[in-house]
Image (cartoon, rainbow, N blue to C red):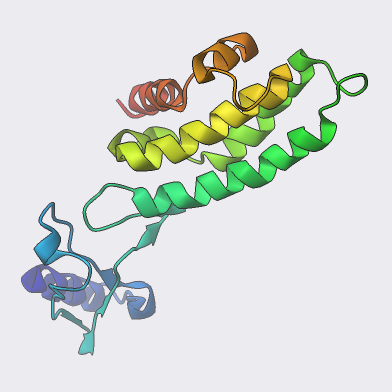
Length: 182
C-alpha cells in the first residue's frame, strides 16, 4: 500500500495535482478482530506526512467499520427512525387524525427512506443484532399505523399495516442498486 501511495504522490506531482492529506485516512478491513479496532495501525506516509488511522471512516454518508458488519452505520438510522416515528405517534389518534392508509404513506415515503439512506448498499452486511434494532422500529411503526398495541404479534401488525420487513426493504433496495450499476 505504501508503494501505491508513493506512486499516487509521484503522479500528483507530475500533473500538478494537490493531494488533500487532511481528507486521507487509513483503515484496516478484516474479519479477524485481532487486526481491527486500532490493533493494527498501518504506518503509511503521503507527501512526507503520516496518514491518520480511522476506526470508522465515513464515505459518502456511509459509516464503515473494520469488520464490515455495518453495526455502527445501523445505529444512526435506528436512532433516526425512532425520532421520526414520534411524528407518526403525534398524528395517531383513535377518533381523530389521519387514516391508517395516510399514516402508512407517511411512513413509507418520509420516515423510512429518510432514515435508511443507501441501505441497499450496506444493509445486507448487517449483523442479526443490528438488523433487529431496525426491525423493532419497523414493528413499532406498524403498531402506530394500525392502532394496535405494541404487545400485538409482530407479524400480525406488520401484515395488517401492509409493511414489508426491513430485510425485504434491504433486498429490494439492493436489487435496485445492483440493476442501476450493472
